[in-house]
Length: 239
Image (cartoon, rainbow, N blue to C red; front, side, top):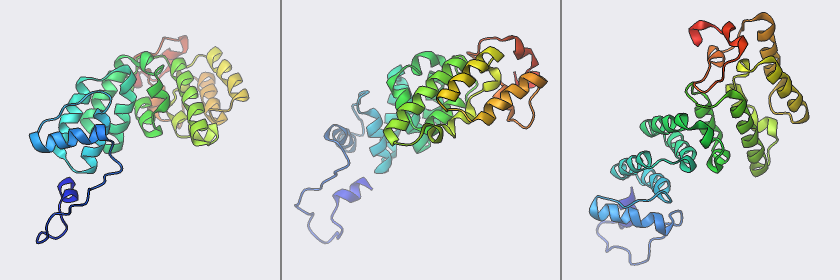
């Protein structure tokens, strides 16, 4: 596809002399594309690697995509991990997604304090919250997700509850103690973030010591979940 952009539409004609304008490609990203086409290798850095991945996907340069993905995986940082996960989710790069998740799982507390976390897309955040291996407690994750919803509400000019609607479905309220749930409920009255039905389900679990009609993984303790007394009532099969 990229080569077609550079060729004349009619092979019998001389190549066009007018400059070809690729308005969606920055010069710093275009140079690695040219380097790859001429040398079958590429020089990358953390500032442009993900943008080069995007261009490689757009112009169907599969070998370049592989080189970029390898570079991103090998040079992941806390500040870049969420953006890399987002690219992997968008372009369905399974290996890159798994490696990004593994990195985020290993240093979750640092990642959720990063700017890139607050700027990540909803599908990428949803992918992250579905993991059982996040090394942060649920209270920390709830605070981080709340901040994420407020930032994105301002950026997208969409009400917080609407922004949070899909995401909060992966918050594991059943892991919170009654005291923590009470605090969350009070905060939620002032700053609606979690549907009251979800909080009611958590209270029902505490009352009955069992959950009903709720996805089982929401009872599963994450790797970073701090122990609470009521956790002994969680279904052992999903611990």
